[in-house]
Length: 433
Image (cartoon, rainbow, N blue to C red):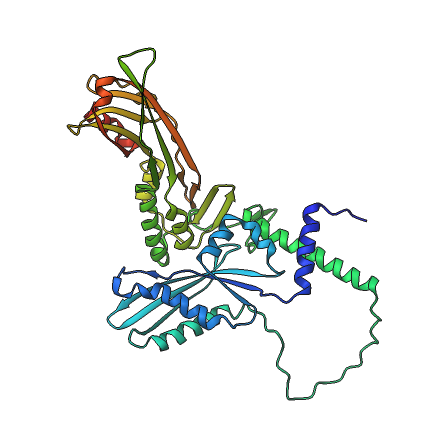
């Protein structure tokens, strides 16, 4: 008999337990709808639509409603999918709305979390003064979008008599035959689960339609006039929202915590004072959640604290400006820590960069120090076909230490930290030094 690995034994137990109990087969993650026009008077509809759907869909058989925290838990720990009943599907409902006079327009997008492919897209409108009717229309639309994925429990019994067909006498069920059936079902379920998990982690791709053909002795796949995806006007809406998110990520992605510096007299030099300051770098809390809520991704990979989002050009139009900004690293920034005196002048500068040319700079007016302890927690890669965004949700604690003449140390009144674009760092330092 073939020995099972421990992981297969665990999965087999989960699947067998799921077979023995009736559980939901569709998980629907509903997050706050996006107010496209940012009109404050209708902001309440963002959560209001979520509450409407949760109230109306709670009794739908085979459907389990999930929220923002559940979505983030799944994204941070994909193994939670293993605890769901066999055959479960996971969908994310993205909603965007706007008001034009008294009409509310709502755009809905249903995304399969396993593949980040769009499963359905709908648009509806309703009167702002008739929220109850809008509620019914919204619920009905979402039920229609889910109907292909929620299995029917039992077929309705026909009013017409069924044709009788002679059937062979069924064999009597035994413990041996039952165990063989269960074992076979478990093996099939494990294979299907492994396929789906391979899709999630990117180890396996979806099978595509075979468009190759044979010409003489050669097999040919025609890519058309250009192997690069062309501009698609249908992608403009997705591109606009993605661009807004990327601009925010590139301009100000970090959160910084500065602890009060420690001043200690130098035991070996009575004219100097040793200074140390602790700074903690991390990504802003909303950065990853914004990425999860923004748009469907071509792929999402996770390795510990590292998350990699892929955006395919089939769904987005990447501009030449974005190409240039990423390829030349215009989004990269360097932390510069300034110690300011009572005259609002910098008396100490710490520049955290690996750039050798910056390390060679000197100053007579400012105590200038260079270090390299900060590491970027976000990076972008772009090609002809796709855009990749990599983010690491960790905290980087850094301690900077240096020595100063006692009068200079006594003059310090304030500490500031500024992220300076890497392309502007040299000119920025020249203006201070």
